[in-house]
Length: 238
Ligand SMILES: CC(=O)[C@@H](O)[C@H](O)COP(=O)(O)O
Ligand SMILES: NCC(=O)COP(=O)(O)O
Image 1 (cartoon, helix red, strand yellow):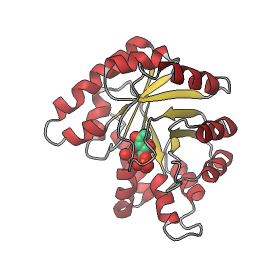
Image 2 (cartoon, helix red, strand yellow):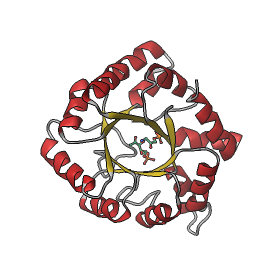
Image 3 (cartoon, helix red, strand yellow):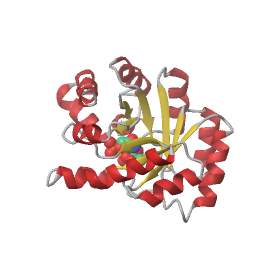
Image 4 (tube, helix red, strand yellow):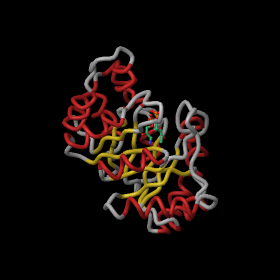
């Protein structure tokens, strides 16, 4: 069954809006684990607008499920990941001024760099996932870099789903089949929601993990965090 890793960036956004420690992101993460999530994802950005490097250190000490650290492997990020040693690092090529992640890696053009970074994380026993658009060549390129998994960037899926779910998922199915052929594990994330999650997971049931933040935290405003985590998990059980 596909695992749910909850991205808690948006909880840190609320905290940072006032200073102080309310809400407490570590406590929220522990509760999210208790409510049934199988992992916690964080995506610290260079401007520290949500999760901060010290949050990541605190989370690693406290969590009992898998910690997935996402981000662009700039030197500070690499040092943090090597220090914290999460279960998984997800390499994302985000520009420093991007409002959120907006593209996957070109794994062919960046092969030497990704191979080097992947080897450094592997030396510490950290699983490496590479964020890619749903393009077979990029999936194969991630394998050539030594990655363990790819994370398919699902923004386009989520955008197209309301108009035509079948068309929206088609490139993801093809990319997921390529990942399976290559012997890569498979993650997916970005803009997944209660509306679109089941369709994706049912068609690509070998997805190892989805990481979901924005929509899930928005839903929690209405349904509460405990109910929401369980609602998302229900979408992955069929
Ligand atoms: C890698 C990815 O898809 C992102 O969704 C990301 O982790 C979310 O980051 P923000 O919370 O900064 O938008
Ligand atoms: N890797 C995707 C992620 O962690 C969360 O993305 P989103 O649900 O906040 O769009």
